[in-house]
Length: 154
Image (tube, rainbow, N blue to C red):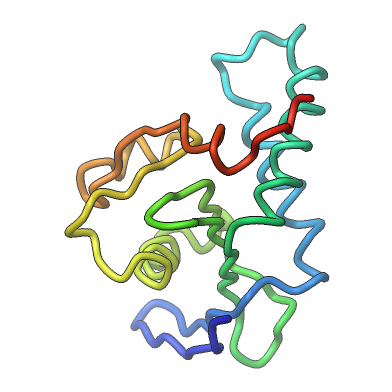
């Protein structure tokens, strides 16, 4: 398990820590809401997709690592989080809108993966994975979900 580490930046000072029970609601709501709001999903499929994605997130939170970025002196003031692993697999990275230009996402990525020299496989395509694909050395690998989450739909 990771130890909380203070990360200094001219823009923002944050602490990175493991997920706590209090973070669960934010993680579920932000992840599922953003995923289901994807413009490529037809509105008639959203209720089914919501349930399926909820089951998938359940499995991932049991098997993956979660790092949370928060305010140093107020542990429940969350700036964002990353769900990753096992290995160099990114499942989801989320940063609240107000903190998006403060490099919180990059610091979460560096905390999870150490560097961007080797490929990082991602399992969920988002605007961020598309935008940062080259910078973060990202490659799509939705098949990783099959290995990590066997039995989600059964």
